[in-house]
Length: 126
Image 1 (cartoon, rainbow, N blue to C red):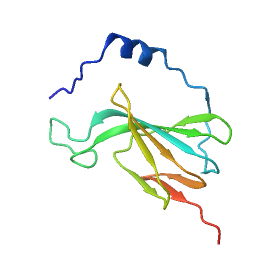
Image 2: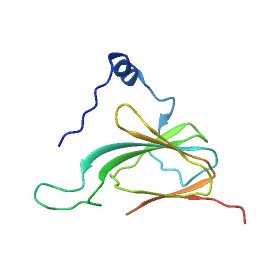
Image 3: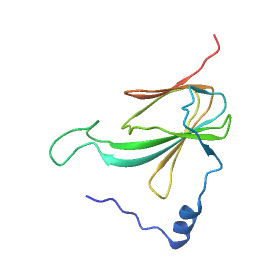
Image 4: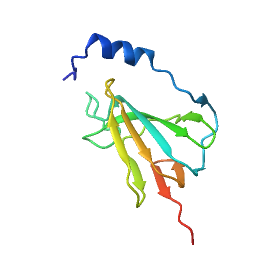
C-alpha cells in the first residue's frame, strides 16, 4: 500500500520553499524552558516483508527533529522512533503538514529523554 494525497501546485511550492529559522546542532537539549517543537517525519514501516518487526506493529519508524526555542536550534535524533511519550498537564497542539509530517507544540518547561524510548516530561516546581 502506498499512501498518496493530491496536493495543489501552490501548496507544493510552499512546501519546497519552507526553510527553518533554526540552526542545526549536534547537542540534544536535556530540557527546554519555553515552547518545544517536535517535527516528525515517517520514514519506515515497522513490519518488514520477511515478517521481522522493528517496533509497534501499527506504527511507522519516524525521524524526530527537536526545536529548542530557548536558543533557536534544531537537533535531529540519530535513530528512528515509533512512539513519543509526552507527559505534560498543559495543552499541546498537533498539526499535520502537507508533506504528511506531524508537528507537535509542547509548552515548557520540559525535560527530554531519548534512549530506547523518546520521552518529554513536564518540569514542575517543587
